Image (cartoon, rainbow, N blue to C red; front, side, top):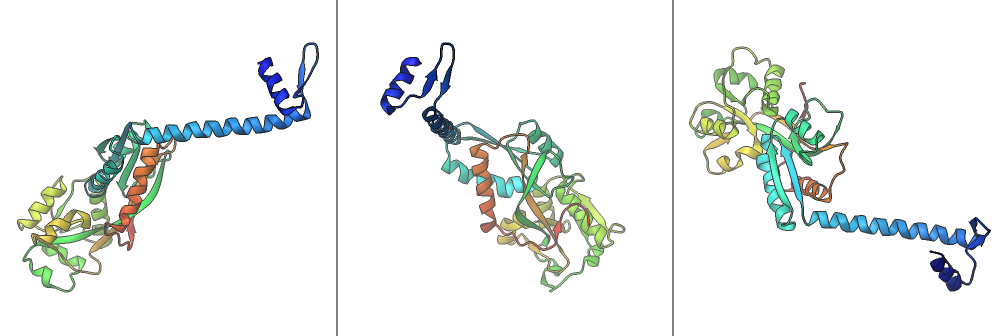
Length: 279
């Protein structure tokens, strides 16, 4: 080390230390050089970190979590786009309810999540609104309500409503809608624990249902089902990106989140009255 210091002093033409028998202190030139040396070391550390993050973005695994609707119609398509840009990053998607997703984010089993409606906010999670969604009332092709300009919520008492199972975000949104319009009594309901099963039941004439407009687009296009029109027959809600506050977000997670945010320009996202928990 002493030879390296002597070489620096010879190169700069200035002494960097005043030397005693047992001690050495920085001269003014040494103090100034120390400031630059510390800055250079800090930049070197930043460069190493930047290159490490770039290496992580080109390899490794990204574990995503989502509730059912955003998993199928937002996260899965975004995974395809992400994979085309970062083919060496292994992707995995876990579908669950909000409690399961919160636990997975908290203990590091998932890196990033998309949920539909915040439910009860978790203190250890950061929730970022990313896209709007609407639950629309659908009916089988040929149903007389399709030709009507407007249907009132009270008219639902004359029909069977097919609803998701209790415990999910969409069922909570539908229940809040029914309570808001005083329809919790006297309404005939079927309960099916799967969005695809609900669509098939509606198409077969089993009843009407509130489903995400993202989920019914394909069936609408081919004429299996159609929307029922009515000013008060839409339930607006919000999709959220969810992160753990306790864990550093990897470059892969940040890149995926950016793609999700851009999805709002490709997927219908008209926000009206946003459903949060219960209104």
